[in-house]
Image (cartoon, rainbow, N blue to C red; front, side, top):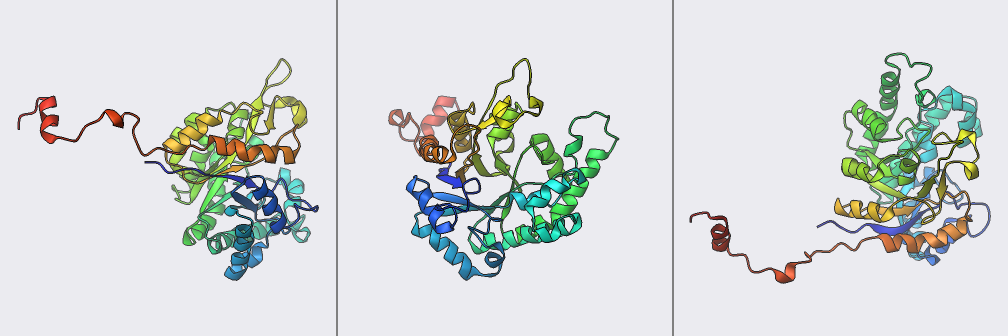
Length: 353
């Protein structure tokens, strides 16, 4: 029978700050635990909470990190490397914006920035293994996204070349993760080249079905693209190794639709909401994931254009807990069954002995 989904857990990236209790791992994990969370997803890039360089080299340091979490009754679910994975592939149009994701020493130097990001990704594989983690969540980065809309007409071979290059950059990283027994769960996200099922297949094909290329399932991005996010689980459940529980809503009108007219988040037709305030069918999602035996964590990623983050966090733990299905090991009609009698089975089917 399928196992149980673990949780509730919370992604710490959106809550970390320079103010207590959000400025140290000890304080923020106690805050999360007090809200009812059992797991935390740690942003590997945030030095206020985690030292990636030390974690890659020192199991003792990782034991200390795990101990801090355990003292506050939470487990580490995954290391998140989204900002690092983003820099593995950056189209020049985004260079100045993405320089903010890296040290100032590599600003204005795309090659140096990419080299730094790859090194950080490799360290995250070692750190994950030192922490006893089997999955890390990330972004793919992007070379083709500026050409998303096919006007002007894309030259033949452009997208194939982009995914060939993307796979070339990621293959040695994924091989390194394989050596350490860790999956890279890509969050399929607009702005990345891998943003839906079709682009995930392009990426996976270019990687020759690399077994460490998996999915961080986040239905909010699919709802905003107007995808069948339940059917997505049917298609790709074998590749789903992480799960962001994030809500969203899509309210098109006579002025705007999916592209949302360059409006700020508050005024967009598609916008992120706190859990339960949007349109995502989480009962359907938890049922599908339970059906296919997903046994990973259900991790709140809070992003809301209206609600205060601390309110969203407080509401998130009970919301997730109420949706996790305690999977049965019995059939509902077992009470009406009888003993297995091989002779009776043959007789019922008209099979001669």
